[in-house]
Image (cartoon, rainbow over the protein chains, first blue to last red):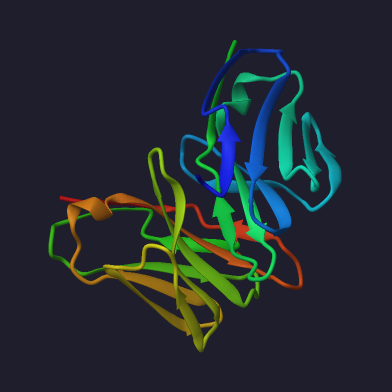
Amino acid sequence: KNEVEQSPQNLTAQEGEFITINCSYSVGISALHWLQQHPGGGIVSLFMLSSGKKKHGRLIATINIQEKHSSLHITASHPRDSAVYICAACRGSQGNLIFGKGTKLSVKP
Amino acid sequence: DADVTQTPRNRITKTGKRIMLECSQTKGHDRMYWYRQDPGLGLRLIYYSFDVKDINKGEISDGYSVSRQAQAKFSLSLESAIPNQTALYFCATSDFPRSVGYTFGSGTRLTVV
């Protein structure tokens, strides 16, 4: 079993829909990262959180430390949100990242 | 200029050739990492360095070597490239434990034929 599991693997949505991507982890962490990878390949850090909730524009990330679970929400989705979203757990003692396999999101106009 | 710069962006090389991928950063971070990304497998750690004199193997270091020439530079070498090393390679930096933020380079797409 992978230490960081994401679901779903693939997600297709219509423009305007509310989207949720889930991440569960089994290791002790100091933080949980949400990353975005566009088709060109570059990786951008969206959020880094260790508790509670963070919001940036239409993106919201939450984490429940007790349940070892995090979610990334996109409100009013847009075709430009189409990308791969990657959850990564920052291992508590070392600070190294353990990555989920990513969720490929496609938002149709 | 980007905070983390990888060169080259794309490279095609032949089996058996030695190739070096370079990474430089202006973040001033001590920690640097090399990852490879394969479809369906996600990102996997090849090597990491906590400072110039501290280099560590990651989960898939076989067939690779690294050099930390300075705080700002971390190079990855494939001594004798093979086709299953075809992948997208990322360099990253972090400021752990001062913060938990990571910064990624734009990636190098390597094809071994």
